[in-house]
Length: 177
Image (cartoon, rainbow, N blue to C red; front, side, top):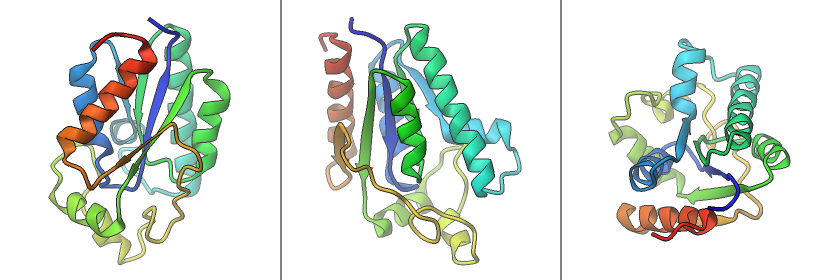
């Protein structure tokens, strides 16, 4: 097995990050899953989604990933991380870091978000954005990755996207499928 790695799934809310992450966790034993939605539900049970709150949450997520990789664990991070600086912070602190961009048009994300049933994901975020709630890609900037190690296009079936993700992770881990 290769040295421990961190894989950060980024993309707009509703792009399919959590679905892909759950598929990878099922397929790859021992992969540690860090979900921003789960972390937020524990750390900020009444989130404001403000800038300072996001800074604290993302830096906490980066810290957890750093500690886990130092302990020899591979980590899969599922977090929008709308500002590139949070992903860059992880890249600068984790030697074997892989940014994975889940590319999806805003309209598709809105439809997926409307239909999702993840118990930790915020509800009706795009609807709330119409009333001014801060939502990446709508009224808060989303900095797309400049050079992600992997880009997954949401136009393909989710099973195919999950296969691409798991095979990529396995190739980095140097573990045969």
